[in-house]
Amino acid sequence: MAAVDLNADLGESFGGWRLGDDDAMLEIVTSANVACGFHAGDPLTLERTCALAASRGVRIGAQVSYRDLAGFGRRFLDCSEAELRADVLYQLGALQAMCVAAGTTLAYLKPHGALYNTVVHHEVHARAVVSAVVAFDPGLPILGLPGGVLLDQARAAGLRTVTEAFVDRGYTPAGTLVPRGQPGDLIDDPDVAAARVIRLVSDEVITAVDGTEVPMRAESLCTHGDSPGAVAMARRVRQALETAGVEVRAFA
Image 1 (cartoon, rainbow, N blue to C red):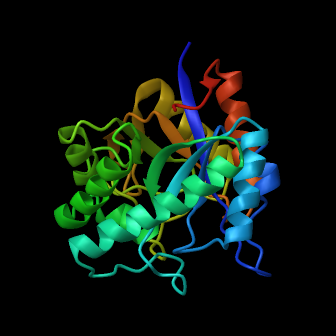
Image 2 (image 1 turned 90 degrees about the vertical axis):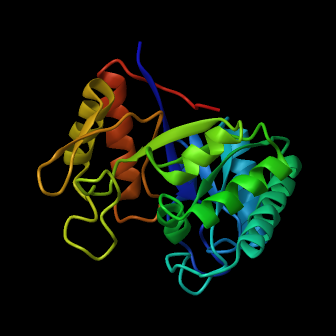
């Protein structure tokens, strides 16, 4: 039987500002990419999210980002390699503390937002992320976009890499994500998303915004917890996978 992980970005509320329905999403996903406070998430939110994930057997990953709370981590920051490495280490340590308090462990790392897209091609920032993981825990997997510099460098450093595809994002012919704000960047129809996911898992191909068929193999599927209708989207995708005989389970 085929198997795939289903992950979502969670723990992104901040103080009195509520984002997404983490409680409902944690009933559906098998892995949670939890914010670390640099793009979203306050300490109390992170503690609660990790405790809830642990209680439901959901694996926890550190969703590290640029230090960009005002921009939700969606802006590139031209920081040095040393600065970014230290920022990633800091975030890993913060979320690991929350995991320990919840009686679980940190299972993987996934970059967020602008950092996620930047390390697909930016060798210096990719090296900073990899270096931080090697220093923190060389057994920690890195989750990222197939074919990117980050996963290439991670494999060269002896780290485990996990390829990911997005349930609710559009793709360019090059296999990268359509930038937010451009036509085709988001998919909001759960049935369309489900059909794309089944084809991706069965045929290892995804259709880009211009109709190009892009080969893609993914061990994990991401559905954004902050998107409109996120819970319905995640539920529909999981239902479609299970109906197709695909086991939904954590990779870590």
